[in-house]
Image (cartoon, rainbow, N blue to C red; front, side):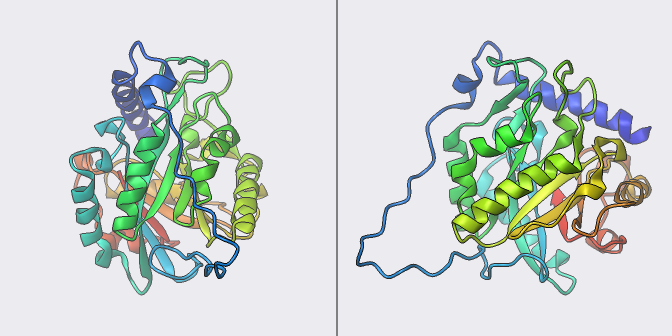
Length: 315
């Protein structure tokens, strides 16, 4: 129940923050338009380029790496640490924490950008979600590349489907250093409103996204991509056993429990119970909500969890 109360309070704050920038605006107007960069074609005489690699080399995330980073969005400070202050400076601070998370693995840093944001109002198309401007994604990707960091697009779909949102960002997901995160806490039914209820997904729905993303990886000869699904409580996902492995996809289940260390450890055990072997373990830390309940968990505490997280993100 503690996580439920904390989760509902956090959701109200996040929805209010996102709504500030949207009041009286069409979703396209508020979040911007435009398109991503268009790659320049090679001339017929150009030698074939080498296969694209991850930001710090190689083409495989697991085994051998631990994903670590911050999340946020330019749409509001309540959406995470990377929405606070100067983006470049926040990423620099983030990278200074990297050595703490190695524990025998190479650390692959990431910036998790909440690109589709659940809203308390229906918006122009009635889907209860907005999308940030393409120019904002461009800015974050440039920053990520300057720091040799992965960019991960986080999706809160509201009443849209995950696949609707994923395909909207296809041209970004064709990039070798852009991954994907799904946040089903904010995936609600046709008669539901984000923030009023907890959302839900299924193993089959995640498989559908993973299959689509795997095809993109294959068609464009991309390195392995992370596909993260965030889970706050066990009821947010059903039929998880249906999850299967997909070529080129590093599947991660992130446990997003809120509270002090004891509460977070208990939530981790409960949410990870029954997780299929196809999914790597992940863990989220909240700078404000967790710290309000006691000291923020240290890297040594987090890395002592069983199973040991292969993905850690701060919000």
